[in-house]
Amino acid sequence: MLLGFAGAFHRSELVSLDVAGLQYTRAGLVITLRRSKTDHEAAGRRVGVPFGSIEATCPVGAVRAWLEAAGITSGPIFRALDRAGA
Image (cartoon, rainbow, N blue to C red):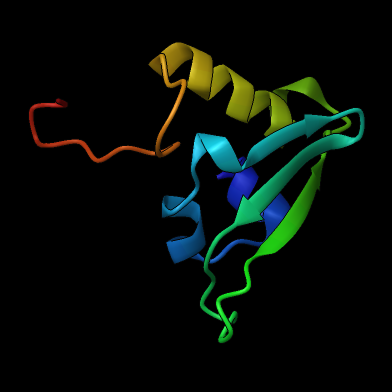
């Protein structure tokens, strides 16, 4: 939720995020979107997400923590779950 709000992403953009499209910088996180609802030419776009001023609500820290906790090193950032949580 923090990342979606900070980056002003559409729902479809959030679910299409990929680890390969993340670039950590001194200013925060740069996310490359391959496709977007408003990108009619399919050129893609880069979105900068700055560090938050409060650690508990920092979107960059939340993404790092999620990837580490979920053991995600490549592929989609957000994965589908079934009813059993698998």
